[in-house]
Image (cartoon, helix red, strand yellow):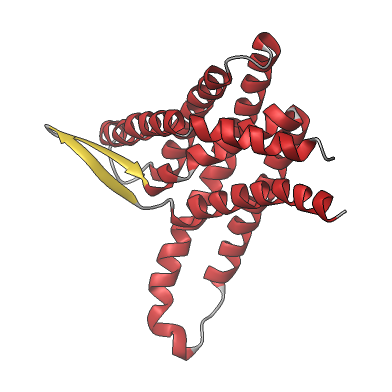
Length: 223
């Protein structure tokens, strides 16, 4: 019984880590950092680049071990988490502060006000990206069976991450005070390197997908 309980906790831990990565990307993803400048073209990325590939890799592990339905259930649960962060951010930024906190109020509203937009953009992009990842990976699994996991993982990640990245970056960072051309150049400067880095990190994390699948299959046998 104790062994059974320990094995069940593996999936709980995986899902908890998945949710934690989502929260990190929502709360801290507004910050962008420069990568390289080519002439007047600046290549940048959001700090969420460090956790997004982990989210997609966990998705693939769950599909591989538990099937598409379980992965879709986890994604739907994650959407509620993003919605909760969005609504809670709206609540707390509109509450009056005490005199003791008044000096920090503007900074608080600035940080979490941006998080509101990030959460709203993520809610749309995450929905399309995650469900497309699950769908594509499941289709590839049906086509190739249990073979070429590395290909199925990265192919589904590359395609779905492009959808996710394009939609998220546009919704989160489009500036209404800049011209369409300036916005286009800035957004492309974010989308392309951000997507490229996601693809690169997906490749780097491929061995961990194999490790995760092996680990979780040991869990599944006990269920």
